[in-house]
Length: 286
Image (cartoon, rainbow, N blue to C red; front, top):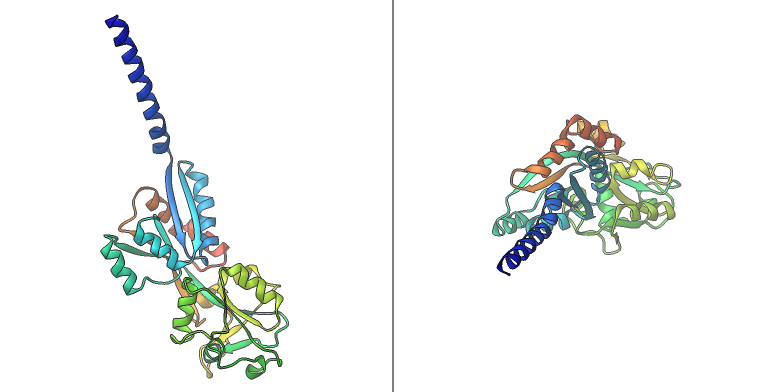
């Protein structure tokens, strides 16, 4: 009887060990990587991810948007491996990160131009930075005031959690508040669709989105001031700095990236990764 009991005990122990080892071996064979943040960067990051995973079946990557602020909050809370951001972190965010024992590392992965788009039938082709500020702060409300038709201006903007919103407010509005009449939309696709449907609309979107929407919307040239000529946004004008409304795009990690996170970021900065940057309508950093 003792021998039978011992044998049963050994069988039971073996079975339990087998049950424990199965899932752990499976999870060890596939690494999970999460990327959250900028809606502007979702298309670019998804393109990187798709190509990267072809050669790395052992790494499973999830990509979600929600805005740069959402991604930064996730980094601070420890709920994402990589934050994608179309703006730099603010002092209060850096302070909160330190309080949570998070050490943000900023990595520039691409550049982007903020493109002003209007309906294709809009008579206006160029605007100065000052005119854009007057329009978006509500001081200019009709297109005839800036050389267009007698049509009310419909202001369209990203929501305040968007890095594009923050960048536009700081660099175009000179930190003034947006007009209360501005309609805040949750995503860039919604902005493009709204502009295409309304002759009085104006919106600002990333260079890649504007390139994809050509034919349904019109891109405006931007003058840095009254003395300079209008500059059309493109890879060349963004890279050279000739186009006034441009910015870097970032990844943020908690300290130096390691393992799957490092592999993915290294790929994004490689010649193959930077080729994808150009193909998706953004501007490479290398």
